[in-house]
Length: 443
Image (cartoon, rainbow, N blue to C red; front, side):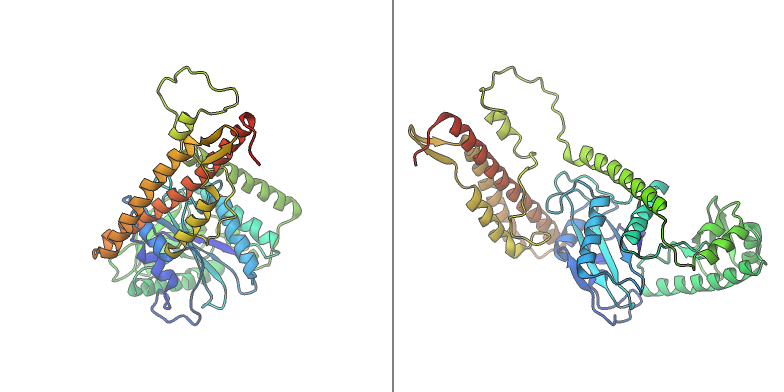
């Protein structure tokens, strides 16, 4: 198993989603097996991506399995959940992020393609599961090693003599993709053979070899070469061990032969990489908690006021913080799929309303009203009115761009209303506990 991230993320939502669900691959060839939607709602993902104003709108990639690796449906879900818990720790699928997972099987092996929207849904802040840098690369490599070892699969040993073209991994137009593939295959064959037979012994000789074959060297970097093929206008960057300054080609040949030998981690190596992965996850958890889940501190001077003895938080402060409060209630009892579908929203809200619509208690002293619940219900009423108006606009709007923006607003309102109903249930439970200390309930 191997995780690869694509160098994309700036297009509209239709680009990556349509590629994942298309019956044709990036070369235009019809897939022998149609794609299968595993998790998420394509329309919601498209709408959310299209509603982002920043340059980078999503992260896309693939978890690719070798032919001998055949994870069951249960194992596929386990791996997807492990991926989320590793790179999106502490963030909730229903509240904080949106992703889409599609299975491809047209290459006689399984590929789990994914798109993660580059925005945290509640705050609107940028969400990047793969920031630049070697530390992040090691994070993903550690995840791959631990997963392969856990399921008994061989480790992926990189071949240092493999030619990598950054443009090749992009899902671009058919002509560009075919050109990149031809260049990659040509260089792989020529350089691979000459390095193995000793005719190219270092990077200087490799550069001379390319120049002799009329390949222009446009830039020489510390860990890459940029080349321009004959009759090509676009320069392409070559990356990999053999293009790095000071590489020992004798050692690279040894690594190349070792990469063909099936390998598993020793117990000590497995423990070390698991500890490393735990450290990376802990760092990402702290980052997500601070950036997305920690309410901003108010700079207003707090008032000095006595609180009732049996009240932990005043009702005024409780109502004030309702919009930003993260509900602590488990939501497993709510019937829903991953991502809120438009036709499911009313059923989900009805279940929440039935569980949280009691805002009065009958006592020996008469009827006691829960003022906090009443305030929440009032806010819910305004939100539901806004949602109804937006949904009506979606039905009458003809501009596709405006429709996408309205759908994204509708999605966010649905999420907010669900959270408010959960807050309502929490307020009622808290109110009931407070009343038990004061009144004797009628039976």
